[in-house]
Image 1: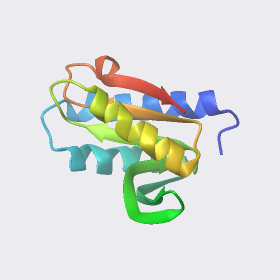
Image 2 (image 1 turned 180 degrees about the horizontal axis):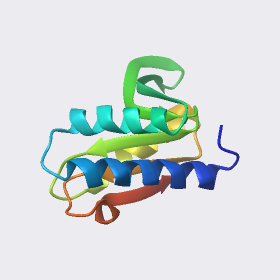
Image 3 (image 1 turned 135 degrees about the vertical axis):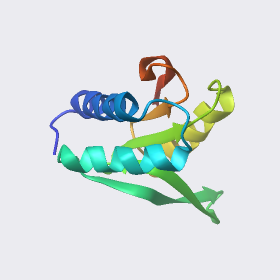
Image 4 (image 1 turned 30 degrees about the vertical axis):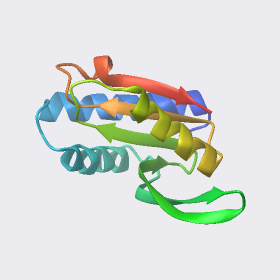
Length: 124
């Protein structure tokens, strides 16, 4: 387990950059998700693929949402392969942050020539 939230975030970004360096852009989101899961496992970072989160409205269940990758039960990671990130993508992460009561998330867009262009940090 990584000691601080910032260290955890930086470790996940490093893992994602490695995935992008090896695979490049152009694949489907599911392939990046699987590769990032492998890279996190190789780095000893605990995570869950497609973690379910219960969504509520005024105390009533709306069903479950699916987080792409939940890292160490505190960091929400959503992956995209789109031309550009939009507010709707950020709002999805914010909704999951609230539902999971998590402090922060990462939105990673693997469609850019370098991953650094496609990283968006989101805080609750």
